[in-house]
Image 1 (cartoon, rainbow, N blue to C red):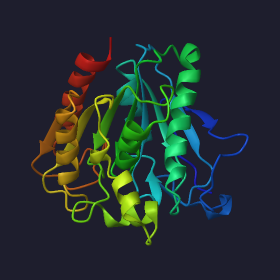
Image 2: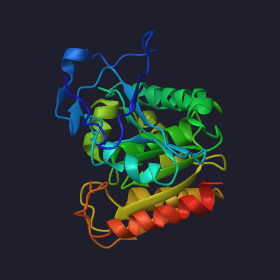
Image 3: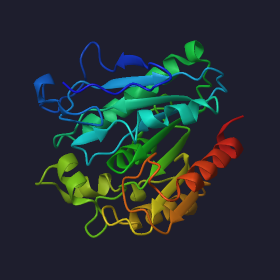
Image 4: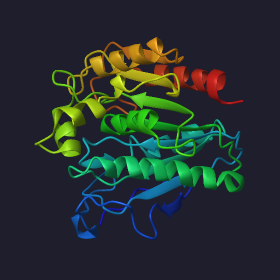
Amino acid sequence: MAAIMLNAQQRPVEITLWPEGAPNSNGLDPTSESGTSSFIMGISEPVLYVYPAANPNGSAVVMLPGGGYTGVAMEHEGSDIADWFNSMGITYAVLKYRMPNANSDVPLSDAEQAMRIMRAHSSEWALDPNSVGIMGASAGGHLATTLATHYSSAETRPDFQILFYPVVSMLDGITHSGSRSALLGDDFSDDQVENFSNELKVDSRTPKAFIMVSADDDAVPVANSLRYFQALTDAGVHSSLHIYPIGGHGWGYRDSFAYKNDWTAELRDWLLREIIK
């Protein structure tokens, strides 16, 4: 079984999401898990890795790494960003969520449970339960936007969302076909496609968003971000869209991305203006 590489400065708090058993199944078992510390596949046992801020300001972010709904990129889209958030006093968590394996309910169940856990530990980690956000990259961005538009209660609704080059839609011509197949299976229905095309599910209660993407992303069409931003704007949800000229897909926190200084500065400014009180 692959193990997450721990942050150099701090060991995360590891919380098993469903100690009494999950409410649904992806048909996988622990022997299905494989990969490396940087990319874990076949996940059947979800874990939340929490990095409490040393000087908390009350806000928290739960990160959903990408991986096409077949695995999760636990480092450059996960643990590598912990110090950066902690430096602002934000408690940061990375969710190793279960792969859908064509059961679309499974990842959303895990994302909702992660939000419940974060809020249940509000006192322990000095969190404001009204300042807990979700963050996602690529297919993890689809899961983040699914949570933002399909949450089942106030307890699981994120207060804000941060999206790296997200998959948002399941519609032909805009979706990432691999993510769609992994989430819905190959024999999906029109109703499933519509339900998980999250740009169609935005309303005035959808949380505010910070969205970033490269114009030359040839893996997930930029139209995903554009349509989601437009839907948020149409619903009166104040959001921020940042399109960088080059960079492709999957850059996360990597120094090789030419606009890393830009997105970190812009996201920091947005957090300070919009989220941190």
